[in-house]
Image (cartoon, rainbow, N blue to C red):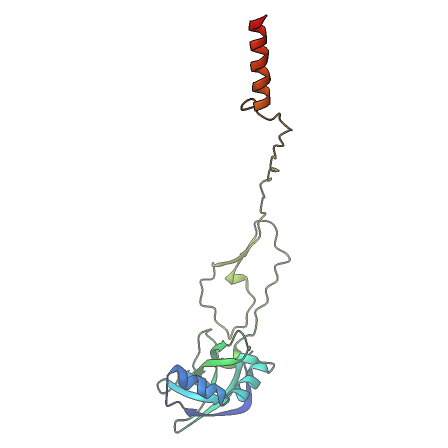
Length: 200
């Protein structure tokens, strides 16, 4: 479940929006963030990397609900929506945050604090050709699944692999070299024998 922690991240609005400005901000230990949803329009800001990284490393991780206080804009409860990690350094380089409004259900159709970290489904009793539907998922009544109940989410089947024939390798035995013409010595000997025959 999403967990609310008494954490306040202080941010400031972002003036420049170019790549150079973003690089400069990262060198100063700040991360470009975009804030959407809730009351008010989208806001582009900069937040301390150490604060956001600490939240992501916590037990609830990206499902942590925290307070974002943007200078000159105000504070609101938010949680991570999307994040971009540098593949080489493994550092957070950008984040999209979603504002939360009490009583308003978000994408998974539940209260923000009811977001499940994982939904476990037991498939050990399924036999060959058995099918598992969304309606078979044991879920809290406070969470609504949007897909139709008859949607198939798992099935058990047997994959029949066709036998692969071993490659046939033809091995040719040694062959006699092809004689293209007679050698010079052979020709001379043949000519001498012919002339000798004529004289006789």
